[in-house]
Image (tube, rainbow, N blue to C red; front, side):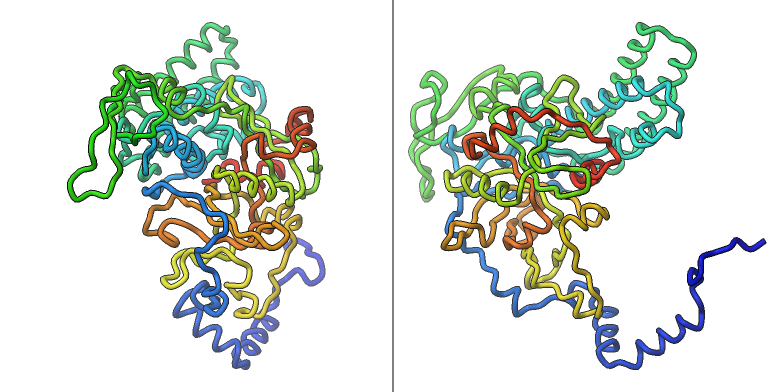
Length: 486
């Protein structure tokens, strides 16, 4: 029996054959075909005339660390971006030219906290059917196996667990490529979800369910220790710092002269035994998540400007800071980032980094702009969409977090272009950095985290007083924030 279809719904062979003949009859189509089939889309679409107009020169440009961080094959950009902001504070306190936090340390506790929240969510929803939308989300994008995250995740981790220098807990094979570890964790947690739902269905009391959950977390901890190594509870801190280090004298050895043939400034040795990760942050970094504001521009259906939003079931640190996004005009987002950079403070940002980006182009690998990739001209189709249309249709979202390190301003003080520190290593982009045009950022960016002092009073009042409105994890906000994506 043939199912009835609406008129015109069947793809007719004759019509398609006609389109094929028509394509080959036009010279422009043949040229495009030859270019794309031999060089791929980005190489064929790139516009070298406009690409070469973007240069790494900015009126406001911060002094950066020597090391360009590298998240390798993992989805930890949000953690790298947050730590790259904080290392500027550490470098000032220690008076050093370079510093890097351990991202493996943060990853360990992120996975453990995500597992805890996942199991809590499974218990909370255990009486819902397996095909309930919330349950299916938790078992898919909401599992603790994902690497992806958001600034508030990192802030909660740092406040609760602290942070350590990279040498104290270096990268491992599983931080550099997390796929196999993540697959193991996903299998383990799915098995645990089945068991927890079975216990609830059988009428097990709270004591029994809690004992089961604790045993499951112990298993997760065992896997993480095997993959990432045991996280330090305390460590001995010994490092060279500059003569202007803002540290107590009793922790510093006398100044050492510059080494022969070295142009470095004189150094002092910082020594402290038995430091906890939280003490390290308190003494040498200084961090209070309450000092920061996250501003986004998400003009999507169902989301209003001036409102503060979160996403149900997606906070990963139980008892930590909830996700809180204040939805504002793009001009407000930009102005806060500009104010921060003018004061020499880098800031967390997020965008849809792969949109119109020739990442692997050898001659222009680090430019994000709207006039450098002419796919419309190459294919003879229209691809233009507004930001609102792209958000509603799930065409764009914040896929990647990085760090604003500089900005070029026009005569009115508005951004023309941004200098962005990435976490793909020094060999990627332009020595690890991206040049981002302001119009590209307005279309594909629009998420920054800045200190409160850089936010206008009226916006700060909204941040402080607007009630937190929770949206569903499959809704437009979760999609826009890239939650559940790597």
